[in-house]
Length: 476
Image 1 (spheres, rainbow, N blue to C red):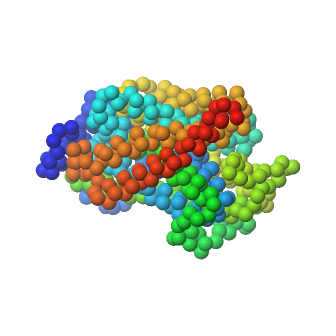
Image 2: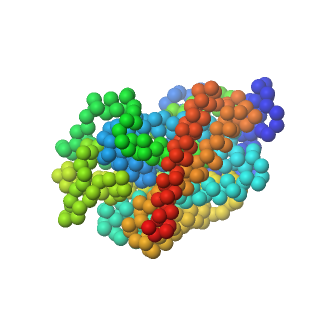
Image 3: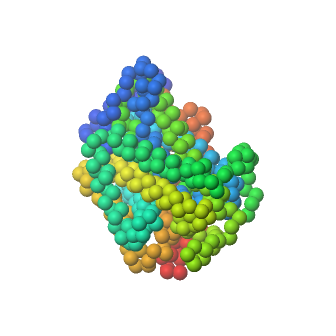
């Protein structure tokens, strides 16, 4: 794949790359699950093929509705009502484009993004790229750990410090699931995502006090704008949290859990069905994120604060919206079920994101470094990298630092994002790497535009985030 690229030889070159990616000296993505899901012949019916390919994008999609995204969605709805729904829609469209491109890389070359970076970039880049990816995964996993811990604290009144320790046990859930194959892992994710969706459906459409104004919602999506004070800041937060770097590595590996063939018709079909899978799964994440924002708009917009059990909560830019939403939904909506459903959805979000984050850790370690360690040890290492900072800081500074920890995780992710996005678009835009399956003009324009906007938003918002982190480190 490294040599000359001409149009006539591109098909052969892709086939050679796929053989190298699949059979190359035991260096396979997620080896224990690689090629484990059978795929019918390319001539089989649409639904038969779709059933075989559906799944990888759903696992990736949970990263777009993880606890780290809830804060920005809640803040957007509470402060600006439906005004930023168009930003949520735009973020989802960009996510679809980038995940479609990541899936294309995996299908067409037989390599995940980490393997491609190792094979096609200079040797000296391997260790820095691997370390940056591991730090980003640890930062993202930190948000999941904290989200799950907060949910356990809210549901069962377990102290945050103890709840963080409890989340260490969920690593064994993934180990148990993987023993039964990729399809069971995907089924569990379906249940968790379904739980989130059902909880918010009930919150919005079943509980009597909530009634979103769909005419206003439609107008907000179709007539975008940033005219209100504070809109740009929250919009940056929503777009900046759009793409998690580890999702790009993970998706390009997960598509290879299907038993893919390397003939032209099969590759074309695999790209087609993974594109559909990505569009459907990430459309679900749009509806979940939109539901979170709409719930906040219905319940909190126009209010300056609330008092619960004698404790006053002021609503503002620094509000811990996840905790405040749980505490105030019940009194605002007149039913304890509102808060309970919210916390259950938060727990499902944290657990589903934890599973995919741990898989991503395996992909980047094996892809960049080709280190083979026991899956259980890989899971434990990934979990410890996320839990130890949380245990240390919460034990030292107390529960009040959770918001700052989440900000810290977002800063790390923002710094890592270009290291994943730029190589992905570089590889998939050139026939030298991906042959005839390179991005067409639409994916090239949409991909590079999305990357430029997301990175630009991250860079724009980085100084404020860094100042917040510095105040946190300095104890201010």
